[in-house]
View 1: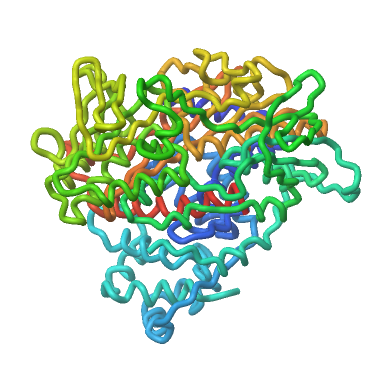
View 2: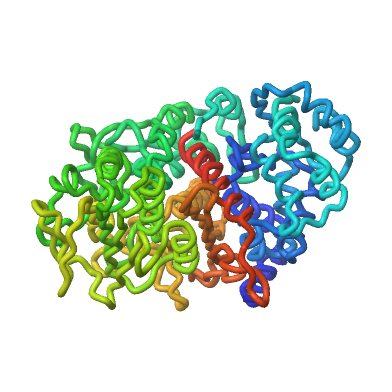
Length: 187
Length: 444
């Protein structure tokens, strides 16, 4: 198991030009689930193009080192070296964030809940987040609701104290309005 | 409800990709190379699209018989009534918009010396590189009594999604309580390793939902094990009953599970020593590389599957001809973890060919590909699981990377405790998101 990862690490020492070229190839395999340029067409798979580099790198490493539970991603990233993870994070962070606004009919209630629970770190539209927070404007609402379920579930290991707190403060029928509001936002 | 949000989706199409391996070509009139792609399934469509995305200077012709593609992945949900087949269907407008010349025709012959492809419609296409993604062809004769005509009517295999999927759905809907749904699985390797077992779960789900609690799902298997086995058995047990007295029963090859003959009139399946009468009989015939590849003599692996080079999927028998998707084999890996025949693999392989060809036609060094697979199975409401595979290429050989591969957890921790339901729910949901994205990745 270790050997495969070590052999891969050797690849990346072969020169930065080759490394960039090869990260394209690896990144393209991510398109299968996350879309070309990291723009997902929905609804449970997130768009990842244009998310912060530090955020993407952190999450992938948390999955890799079992600090954060995942249903599928943790297996995948365990096959990548830390350098590849950093390169993938840089690659997708360099793409343009493309909101895909989805209609929501609980906009008013969502906005009120967000003001109280989410605005401080994510901004009211989710488009103006703090430096380590991901953009949420026009992200897929269903994906975001599933993420909140993870933060709320005792059995699902999630490392982010603030997200767990905020996620658990919400009531079960707050999830749709909150994620619906962010998902309906544009640029 | 699985509703595809077209409006939102169309907005995402206004995306162009710029990268180190993207080469823009101002002089669109003179093409730098011609690539012909045969087969418009997940593999062929992805190859055609990504060639155009990465280098619009390459002329791409895709030859595909049908004008509408129906995704085989997740078609088991159509059979059970959980999914509308239209959510699995896509046309070729997206590829046309990318500048792919889509030709709805059938390939009749290939001349690898002159590098031309001839079609039933009387057309001829020259190529610098040929990508074959012909899928599989079924060996009906391997099960005595089975014919192609019967598969299109009384005994649908529904192992190529489309009309047969709907036929099988109708047959299941009409099956009475106490009825027996037989699924006959061929000896591997076959298309979609977990498919028959997901189908069993979906059929059982349908039965439970429609009060057919005395129905049985009987899997007659030529094999002695199967993909994600502990996960399927766990779910079957929990959701439908498995084994003695349960709704689902599995007969492995070692227990004489292989179906040798079928009597269409009485719907009876005959194994070596056994006789099983069904109300619905779903025989998945043994299959092999699609005709187009076989006719060219490329199926050198057991005379069934096409062998290819790890670094670029080029046929080991024919230069400048590349074989991707279910028709190829990814070598006999020491750990017996050869490429699964899946849509995700086909897309992965298509991207590897594309990277190799773009580099070749632009005088760039040949890249080293990475192959990934992610395959979801949905066995119940809010119950799904997956397998992932990661392959690298080292010293011209495929290497299966165990660290980045594996199935969803069956239990968690030591001592083992049950996996929280949220995990299963997430993967059932992710299966739908995956489907939308792979369809767009290949066709949009």
